[in-house]
Every structure is written in structure tokens, then in C-alpha cells.
Image (cartoon, rainbow, N blue to C red; front, side, top):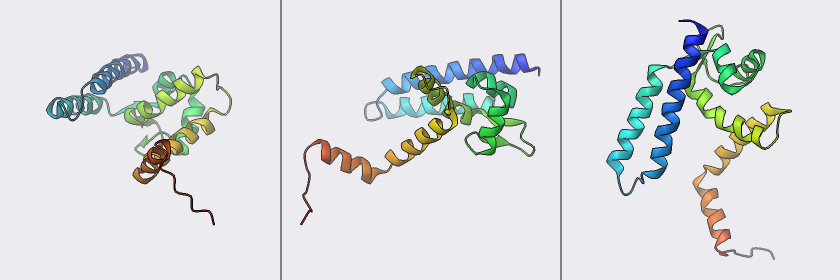
Length: 148
């Protein structure tokens, strides 16, 4: 498959996945759990149709240079496929892509790698249930003064 054909196919998969995620955002788990599960299976199936893309294709999808994609792959921000980094998973591109787009919209173009890594680390931190519970308690004013 040519690079152009692979890029075209990857763009179609990404568009389908973005559409599915938009619908998932509307379908609530507590109201329609079966529908949500079907949407998630469809998204995973669509992703599995194109598990990986060439580094050059990932660079176009992320609007980055090819050396930058190699660097991000070496640092583990993008998941390499096989030995001798020539391909990355489309899933990892899809995880990083919204962050790159958001940071660019905010005018962040320099040190993009550090900014993306910081966002990923922040997301992991805020995924901690205890931290989320503490933040919610703080928002509700349920503070406990432990100062002596």
C-alpha cells in the first residue's frame, strides 16, 4: 500500500472513530449500557482494521515532522510496532492527536513534546479516584482544618 493510500485509509478510520466517540458522549452508560457497549465494540473493531501506520503517516496526521515522530516514539509517547521503529499504533496516534490539536489552538508550538507529556501526566494524575473525590469535597466546601 502506498503512503498516500495508507494516509487516506487512516483519515477515514480517524473520522469514523471521532464520530463514534461523539455519539458515545451522548449515550449515557446508565440509560443505555447495551448501546454504549456496542459503540465501544464498533470503535475497537474499526481501530483493529488498521492497527498501525507508518511513521510518515503519523507525522502527517499529527502535523509534525518525521524526526519528531521518531523522537516521540523513542520516548514512549507513541507506541512502536515491531522492531526497528517504522510503524506506530494508530491508537497511540489517536490518544496524542487531541492534545496536540488543543495545544496548537492555545498557541503552543515550541516545546510541544514537554507540553503533551505534561498533559498526559496530568490526565493520569486526575484519573486517581481519591484525588477526584478530594477535589469534589473541596468544591463542596467540605474542608477539614487539620492545622494545629
